[in-house]
Image 1 (tube, each protein chain N blue to C red):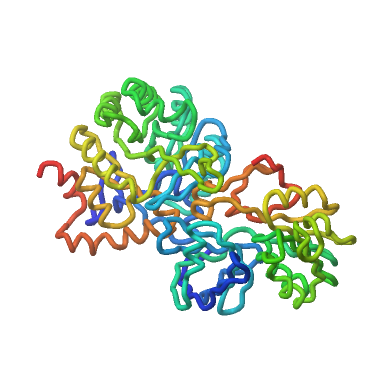
Image 2: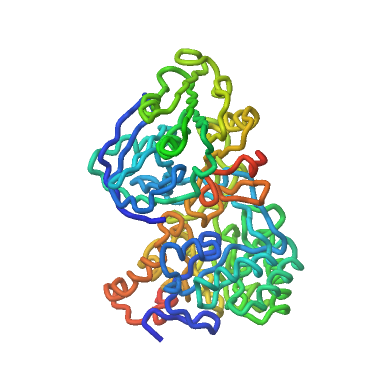
Length: 305
Length: 244
């Protein structure tokens, strides 16, 4: 194991940097910029049982320290993902990949997860119970401990690969949701998804986004994410994948000190397609600066201090 | 696609709110007319996508309208400013379809990408006609530039203060073999309904990344969804549904 490597649910990552779902497509757009095999891994675009076009445009709006998005889970549906996207992904990425799954019912989650579970390159299933941008789906399961545990238990019964549950920050008690997922058999927790927000256009005097509301992401949410990762990692005994506004190597280290075993980088990829590669390249020097020998040693380091 | 550092070597107003900016840097990926570049600005989180007006071996030129905070900041950039610029983005105009007498139809801030296109078309076509539409005389720009290329240029203004009174669709010439258009969506729809031949449309949409990753700018077409930043911004007339 190198100084950057970590183990996530039994699978070794060369480094803890994971490109986050919804910001990295199925990888090949970024492979035009650099060899994406330098990543720990990436979580591919949220996939559902049926194809989805998503919300009307405008779907994105800028904020001072980030952006709002209301994409609405646009994806070609799991069958096309398996038939068309994964073969393309395989041509540019040779490591285990994280399969991000969304759904509108328990049966929906189970179906999509069980299809992707059979794909050799899928290392982990990241079950998104926290999408804020679709009616009646996603976040409904992520804001109630009982609903969350039912999804997790049903998916776990149907799959063999590790299940990481992606949680919404839009709850009063994140720890109770995370604990419910752990009790239902989750192998890991990832957080945070985006925070609902709105921008209003002063010229039209209407919300910028056609969906009115969208998920806020980017550097502005980082301290909220660090706090929630810390709270969850303090309580559960399964790995936590931290994300939310991570933009540099220092942010990765801060997330790991808060308890993250691995760290996802999302919105930063959209502004700088080289963001993940730059962070990975900068990590050794930043570790030296702060006297860190191996990243695995610092996971949760801030918790029992 | 390439991300590299460019230097501002010209940035000046053409009309009260239209600016022309020339950027010097690695233009190896600046190719097809109709493609765009995406500029990182201090003070803005997301990049700003702008279509390419002109390019030469050392620089790329954009013409932009000041519409919000980003373009406001851009309009104040001084010569010598260094900017991170992504180049070679999107799928531009296909010049092979032009035929002998193509027609270019531009409206307001949609005029610029047609200039590099016209430059390519005059080399291969016997006649290139251009119709440029503006609201009023003080908005008019680029008329002389198209004329200098040898194009037959008609200008329309909505209030009749210059050129033909009315919209671009009131001044479409006869006998064109194909058309290319860029402008506000209402104009594009009118052009769609008023043209007798096939053609290509360049669309605008709010973008997150500009290179196909975020799905922020998707639109429906007859052949499934397309990303304005990746499969677009240029779409063929036959693909367009106007359903979002």
